[in-house]
Image (cartoon, rainbow, N blue to C red; front, top):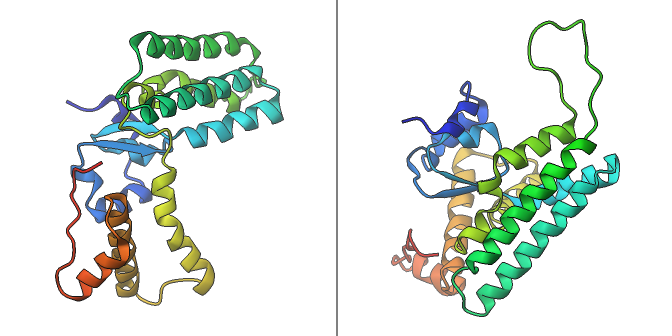
Length: 230
């Protein structure tokens, strides 16, 4: 059975071709936290959307298009994050059902009441084919409505993050490397760089000392990070 999200994958795009070559997502069955790229939805895994990106988009709608619903939704997401963080620090494994329902309803109410204030673009009567063009704020509103489950995943399951900033920090050094030297001098050099960075990142996330892990690697007994450890 085809994942409904895969309907967005109309054709094979360059991003998907690169991710296919990496060999991770094609067989991945866990949760993927991403920025709602069409290529991300081409994979039959569970999807979660990054709320750091949503906060930036909502700020844009608030400041550039005076969308009050965007202000209210930002507050809803940040309040939910604060409550989840507090519960985790206190040792809880989930929010009370009543609080999950509260944030779920608050989220839907903000989007429902904000719809009327979204600008409508003038209709181009010269176009007879294709979809009617919407304002960019309406496109973002539609995404937040249609993907509520992926947006609020962090309140349903504490093992899921609020955003994908951790993953973005992991790839940031690649961009720093490119800015310094302009490029990698060879494919092999890029592979070695990525392997070292990936190893260091994995051992740190799993509570090991990165320096000791590097010494172990040089001595021929590199640590093999667990694939299923949070």
